[in-house]
Image (cartoon, rainbow, N blue to C red; front, side, top):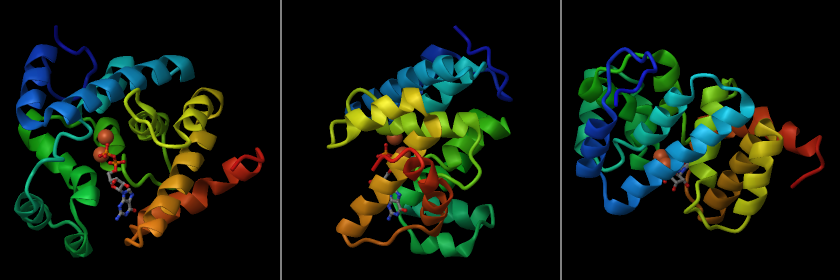
Length: 203
Ligand code: GDP
Ligand code: FE
Ligand code: FE
C-alpha cells in the first residue's frame, strides 16, 4: 500500500520498510517500527488527524542514524548549515542534518514531517503536535526500559506537554551525569517546558 499522507512524494510502505531494513541494524529497524506504532497511538489519542504522517515520522526519524560522520559533514557543507554543527556528533546530526538525507533519498518535502524529524532529539521551544508526538514516542516506545519510562508513558496520554518536559528534564540530567556537552537547543527546550512539569507538581 501507499501512504496517503501528502508529504511531497508517494511512498510505498513495503518499499520503505525494505529500504529501512537495508539501512538500519535489526535493533534499530525494530525501534523505528515501534516508534511508528506509538506515534500512531498518540496521534489517535491527541486528535492529530494525519495519523499516517505520524507513523511515517516514526519510521523515518532515525533513517540517517547509521550514516558516517563524513556524510554528515558533507551535508553540512553542501546545504550551508550552521558551521557550529561541525563541533557535534551523530547524536545531534542524525536528526538536524539527517533531514537533508531524507529529502535526497525519498523526495519528501512536507515541512511538518521534516521539522518533527529535525528536532526529534533536541526538541524546540515551539513544538507543534506532530513534533511532540514524535519526540515522546521515541522515548516511550515499547522496547524502552529505563528507570522512569513508566511515568513517561502515563504522562504521554495524560498531558503531552508534561511528557515533553519530563523527557527533556531526564535527558538533561542523564547527559550532565555522563559529563557530556548538552546541545544549546536542548536547554532551550528544557527552559520552555520545565514549568509544564512543575505546575503539575511532578518530578
Ligand atoms: P535515538 O536516536 O532513538 O537513540 O534517540 P534520540 O535521537 O532522542 O537521542 C540520540 C542520542 O542523543 C541519545 O543517546 C541522547 O541521550 C543523546 N542526546 C539527546 N540530546 C542531547 C544533547 O543535547 N547533547 C548530546 N550530546 N546528546 C544528546
Ligand atoms: Fe534519534
Ligand atoms: Fe529513535
